[in-house]
Length: 92
Image 1 (tube, rainbow, N blue to C red):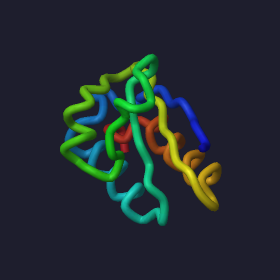
Image 2 (cartoon, rainbow, N blue to C red):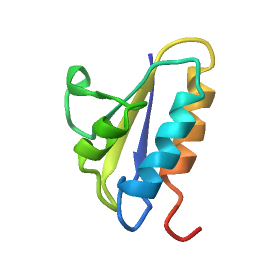
Image 3 (tube, helix red, strand yellow):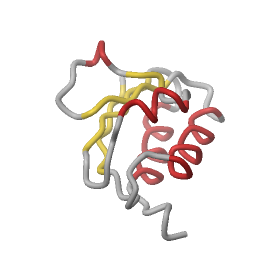
């Protein structure tokens, strides 16, 4: 299982537009990706392809989240997702 941490850069956190962009990117992957707030047990992680899960996570600007995926290409996929989360999508 691959794992990456990311610090949420969007000023509004993972809400509305940033969450939609992130979920769309996850949906294009042939992997199951989970997301959780840093420090939470892996078994409490949420489905990163679900907009409802992302919105209920409550991740704000500056919060650290943990992404996990397993399978071929997981490392590269997680690296690309980290880049999305660590970009201020509200500024674009």
